[in-house]
Length: 232
Image (cartoon, rainbow, N blue to C red; front, side, top):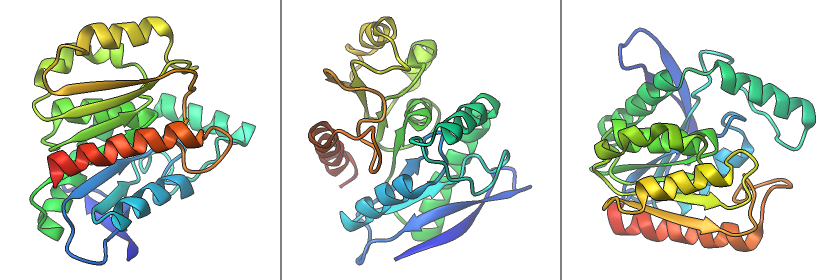
């Protein structure tokens, strides 16, 4: 079952929408699905639906609500890609993390799940790393996270398991940045990094030209095994 729901911000002064996908039976746990720069579009909703099919409650919050509520963009359309990049520049990531925290609390209070994890893509991959450091997410996964080298100062705050998927030919994350991620995180007891040779940014998207079937399947299986281990 899917529905749009409203979540109160942490300060209670506003609210924002989220896409909720519920499993047929009692959820094993909840997973927050953190959007790319394209909003809660068909691809993100499909990510949530697949998690629900696997028995999880999946919630995808509209993190761009303060800029343009309900926006859905297609990365394969040039003008929409540029619009998405513009939105990313305007987006307050600290506010985004607070909205993710509000979504975690919503999952626990509204649905009574004991464990809540998160998975994010692109900008959402970066936010997933930040969420692992700044929230009580029980297990977190980030796909092609951008700018993690600038966030390594927060790594000691990561108390619960975090997995990052790193495409080696990521046009937004150069080799120097990838090396910094490995140098900073390889010895972290809670962090696991997986590299994908030959892959570019967005290889695990559900739809569109960026997807690579084989590597997307590998990454997604690793993620599902990770969640099964840490969320149940």
